[in-house]
Image 1 (cartoon, rainbow, N blue to C red):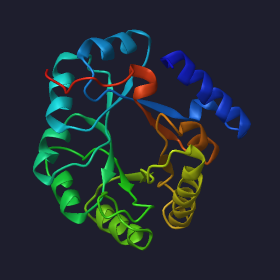
Image 2 (image 1 turned 90 degrees about the vertical axis):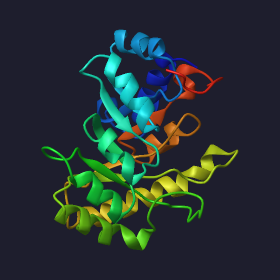
Image 3 (image 1 turned 180 degrees about the vertical axis):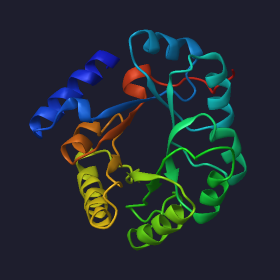
Length: 222
């Protein structure tokens, strides 16, 4: 696949679900990719890029254009929040009060966040359970953090269609939350193998790496 093919498939999935493709943000997940690959996509007009390691994102941001919108999409250690906070356009992986406290510290308003929900109740994955979303949301709002929506990484399956129920569940949780907090509307869900299903179920942000950049053959080395 390629960037052009991904955008075409986004448009087709949006059409199937009677949605406007412009309402869906493609986050090009550039983790472990060289700066040159990001710059090539930037030169093609793309601006939203995702990283999952604090140091790597900081190093890339230091040498790339200032108008890139950086999305932090991985688990974030509390002691790394200060490194990520000044760079991030949107944090996708807020999952605990201690991280919220760290995120709220610093100069100026903290960048907006999404609450990560563990829809599969997988012990090895970050994210809050369905019944914990509201409590964390209220805590974050009290800290003055802007909560824009929810994010999920469903359990892996060889059959992408198995992801649909998890995407639907996240949308239902979002709809419940919006009854009291109408600003919590974003849904970050869907990756290379299942982003079309995620769009059909209401994703407003999709996180796609391999389909755009190809396989990652080596770790980031600067």
